[in-house]
Length: 338
Image (cartoon, rainbow, N blue to C red; front, side, top):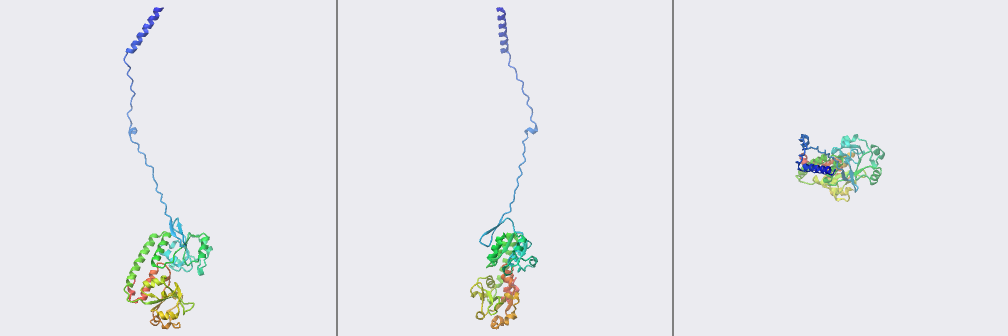
């Protein structure tokens, strides 16, 4: 029995030794697959599209009442409360955006077809204005403060276009109206053309050999012996000066003043311009006034009607007014005035 166990032990040791002496098994290689074209190609990822959102800039302008008005877009439904504003709007190409006007707006002709919201004696039909639902109301410094406040209380968006005292101020008003109506380019082109014509007119004035004294009559209906005229520093005063004349009203006090016949006789104007000719005043009716026959302008037939709208309304037609003044004050140069 012991011998059998010993034989088994020897056999086991023999097998172990055989296993130790046997060569190591060669591992079976794992097959490597050739990469496909799809695997080796660099993946191209389409870029995420970008979008540019253009936001229209807001419009900021002085409101003419000490504040600033901000508009999200140009005004499209406008009510004009001054003839000068109406002319400015049409001049910059915004006529189609005007939905109503005050009753004295008579130029251009298309404006007369617009509905009127009143304006006589400073009274406006606010109910009618509300019904139009304007997005902008253009007023003037002549609009009464209480009227402006009432319009603000009703929720109207207001801009008071300044009353210019120089041509440069008038040009600024054109650009203001162009900006708030979306017609900036047209306004700038208009200003450039007006300035060019102004310079050409002034070049003609420079050839004048004299400076006639001018009386500009605004209104003689209350008292023909004390008519109203334009005083120092006014637009009329400036235009007369630019046209090569001397405004006799510049010696008075205040922008608008009455002048007596006695003072007129002292000043003795060379030319009388009838700004009230639109209301029926004629050179013949002036010559019939007591004492006026003594004035040189009357004696020499130098009393002329003039369209006061060209002079008093602060708008583009004031350059037409300047040209007309030069023709009347310096007839020898009239053919050269552009």
